[in-house]
Amino acid sequence: MSSGSVRFHRLQPGTVSLGLASAAILSLLVTSDADAQRARRSAPTEAIVSVYDVKTEPVSERVAAVGSGRALAQVTLTTRVAGVISDVLFKGGDRVEKDQVLVKLASEPEAIAVETAEAQRSQAFDQVQRYNQLNEAAVSRVVRAEAETALKVADAALRRAREELERMTIKAPFAGIIGLTNLQVGDYLAVGNPIAPLDDRSTIIIEFTVPEAVAPQIKTDMPVRASLAARPGEIFNGKVASVGTRIDPVTRTLSVRGEIPNPDLKLIPGSTFSVSVQLSGEKSPVVPGLAIQWDRAGAYVWRLTDDSTVERVDAAILARDGDRVFIDAALQPGEKIVNEGGGLLTAGQKVKQLGS
Image 1 (cartoon, one colour):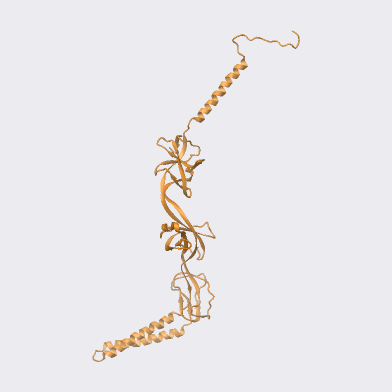
Image 2 (cartoon, rainbow, N blue to C red):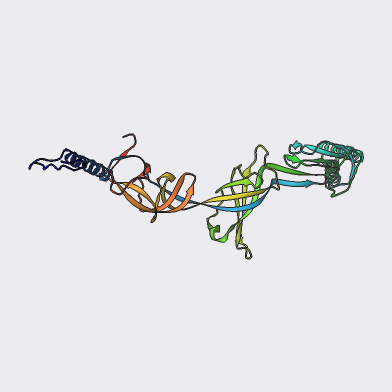
């Protein structure tokens, strides 16, 4: 045969090329492995989840408002009599007790009047005592009656003199924090002139309004939460102290007065507060926030059946309280739902409770 020609060999009947056989076997192996993987993926697996026992509680709704705070008791001290100041016994910002003396006025004439009245009363009392020691024949009834009347007049005059002397001293009507003053010793204080403000800050009163729609639900002693508008991160707890009796015809709101304890005097009267009152509605299932799942149809939870499989229960969210969620769902108290681990579950899948 000449150079460059091609020689063909005829295969004997019944023989198979080694390359073709290897390819066929490899193809079968790959196909079998893929089928096995698909079978494993399609077969349901037992997922490990944490569960939660469903509870029902009244749906919590908070009514928010803004109000201004004032002291439990507050007054601007004045005087009922005019006089020259002889002593100022406080400084602005001092904490004073009830009946503590704050200002004294010059009172020498009033003190003399008390001494005079005491002497006259003593004289009248002695006269009555002498007449009482004598028998009725020695002293007529008229004389005895005149002496007793004179004693009563002396008693009244002494009380009046003592009261006028007492008015020359200004005392704190209740315990609290006294404010700033410009008064000094030697100043003339006229009747009605302001001395200083006095506030009982042991409790702060916050007055606010709520809408007409929720007015019937507001009751005394309900919990109140307040925070300062200037420091919203701090929460102060109190209660509803009193509730108005009429709806305002213009604003359609009800006036409410709340009390916030202030033992450390941290809160200052006149501050603006954000206030909320928690209202209780009808009972509904409450579940952890992690138990809520979502898809195109909306929110739902996984409920565990008796054979440890899961079924979907549609849910509508009513309210949130921290990490708890109030929902409208066909759940009964005591039923178990999936808390954590429900993200990849499918309906009818078996689950295993964590720790079991």
